[in-house]
Image (cartoon, rainbow, N blue to C red; front, side, top):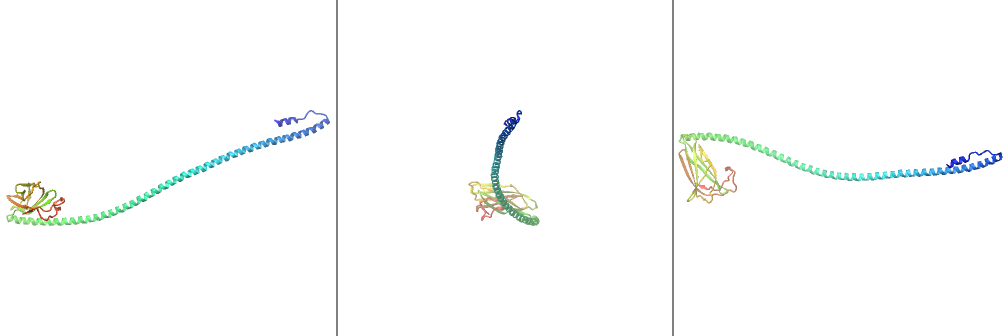
Length: 294
């Protein structure tokens, strides 16, 4: 606005006389020079202010950019540090877990090796036992076959003897052997070998009776089975329990077969007791004395 007024002020006035014109031109020239100087100063001042304002804006902008950069750098550094710490702790935990897992795996591997070694030894032992069992089985089969052959020969020989004995009137009913073994809990096991061969060579029915005797009373021992078939030699085996408070003095065996009757008395004599109940007659140990004597 000031600049326009100055230009308007410098516009040419009305035309005067020659002298006045000269002096007017001179004054105008001086006045215009002074006005130009002031204008330049004003322009320079405005330019300086504009430059100052522009410099201040640039400085603020630069400071703002620097602040953003510093904030970004701080955030980047803080995020990197935080991420590094989290990653470090996570890596440390994973490393510790990996170490623990590795130790457990090593222990499991050791256990597996020990188990494998034990299993290998057991397999080797089982293999040896199997070989021994197969060898024993083979030997048993061979022995069984030999026994079968021997039994067949004995049976043929018995048949021959039975035929000869039958032709000579047969073999009468008789007791070939007798024995009673003591067992635990006041039990006893008896065994009697009976021989008989009829003159006609046929099998006959045998009815045995076993009785325990004391001074005033007797107890009949129940036998199972009640009767037997006899053709040559028959074995009577069984067990019984002594009645409570009964102390026999004698034991009587009565046999009946094919119209023949045999009776044998034995004196009761108790031998040493057996601690454990045997599973079968073959498992019975031999005692020093039999409880019966003929």
